[in-house]
Length: 338
Ligand SMILES: Cc1cc2nc3c(=O)[nH]c(=O)nc-3n(C[C@H](O)[C@H](O)[C@H](O)COP(=O)(O)OP(=O)(O)OC[C@H]3O[C@@H](n4cnc5c(N)ncnc54)[C@H](O)[C@@H]3O)c2cc1C
Image 1: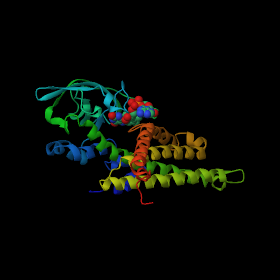
Image 2: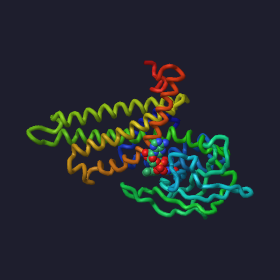
Image 3: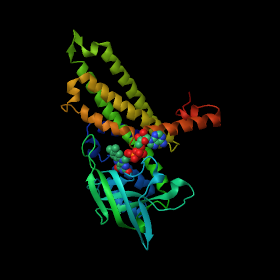
Image 4: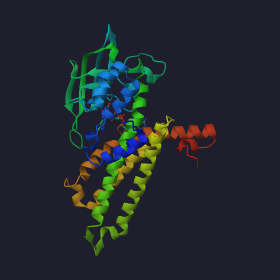
């Protein structure tokens, strides 16, 4: 529809008020991130084969990078290996937590192709893999604290991928990852805004109806503080997402702002849902409301697509750099004119 990221913030936040909203709009992870990736990196032929049906909602896809044996936070450690063999690549390796793998028509697969690259990050390449394929075995759907949600473990054995299915150039996996992860992380934040707003709505709804010790919960200062803290955090979260989305739309450097938004919104989401559960008492702990499910879903937000600590490391690095370069930290706090 030609919507930019600021406009998508409104769409995705609204869609995520229902668990199935993003799917109804075909704006769910990981397909949405894969659409962006293909739009920017695929050849015209690859776009026709993979992007068009994905946008039309006729296919689904997955993104396969994380491995059980090595830290997903550090892609230079990736062990899945692709070796050229004539007009094909032969891939062997092991992946897990590959969302949407079951039923996916294709995967964007990250594998090591380069030995001794100029910079350590330039050792990986991306491949488009048609699925199902001989050599691509779904071992299991990894059961999580919120159940099984098609986050699969994959064993890759002598998988053959035609050379023209490489996405981007050799050793460009990290560039592709960076281009993908900024907007994809922010798209998560947009959906989390919708979840956080739902939790706050539920908190206020319950507080204005539940009566205890002579007054409604909403009339008690202790509960008002929970509501006020949540309202302030949601407001901050919305502003951070809108600003980061604006920077992406402007093609400006968005890395710090997306990192700060990802960290802040993920943590605010957990706190707001937790307060909503507290105000609901036993009902909040039950599965009679969506809050319990929302809480376990929210937990992964703090480490998937960049763990809190890795974002904090990068944010601190950029803040120190800004001060050493400009004599001021302003550029690292959104570079706003104030
Ligand atoms: C629900 C869900 C869906 C996912 N979907 C996908 C998917 O579709 N495709 C895919 O490829 N992956 C997917 N992942 C994997 C996800 O991207 C990884 O979990 C993430 O990259 C972190 O990697 P890891 O789990 O190996 O943790 P590790 O890298 O082992 O990190 C563990 C912890 O160590 C700490 N840590 C790591 N590095 C540092 C550092 N430099 N400084 C300080 N502390 C540090 C952090 O606390 C971090 O949480 C998914 C995960 C979940 C939970």
